[in-house]
Amino acid sequence: MVREATRRGVLAAVVSLPLVATGCKGVGALGTPPRQQPDVTVVRDAIGGETLMISRYNAVLAAVPALAGSLGPLLQQHREHLARLRARLIEVVDTEEHTQRLLLILDEMVNEGMVTMEKVRVLRYAPRPREGSATSG
Image (tube, rainbow, N blue to C red; front, side):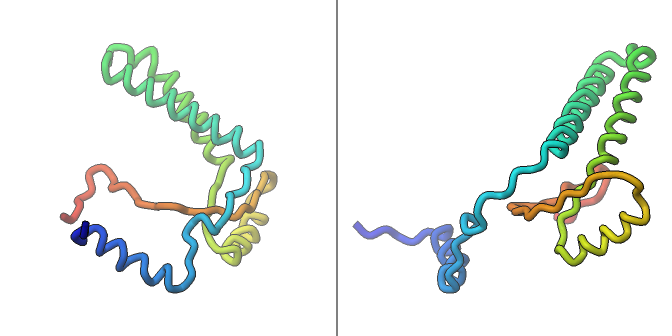
């Protein structure tokens, strides 16, 4: 039985042929990414919790606007807490050279904090369009 080549199959072959020819083993060749430090995990989890709490407050306020007077101050407290948490976790994905230059600047600006440097594997990045911005189509 002879299978007819599909457009998808041809495109996949065209894209992967140079990678195979150069000996590329794909993202699997990068190995397992390192485990993040416990402090980073705690801060990320707290950021996730606060973000979820804020979204729940927003959902309740959207459904019952009359609660704005009582829930508004609590929502504001959670937003401020989230801002403080995010200020404690600065994540930069860049070359080691640029990161080293950033550290020199941080040394002058920050009195206390923690910096971890880890090799990361970025699988995909696609910025979301901002609300109200025009998209070309």
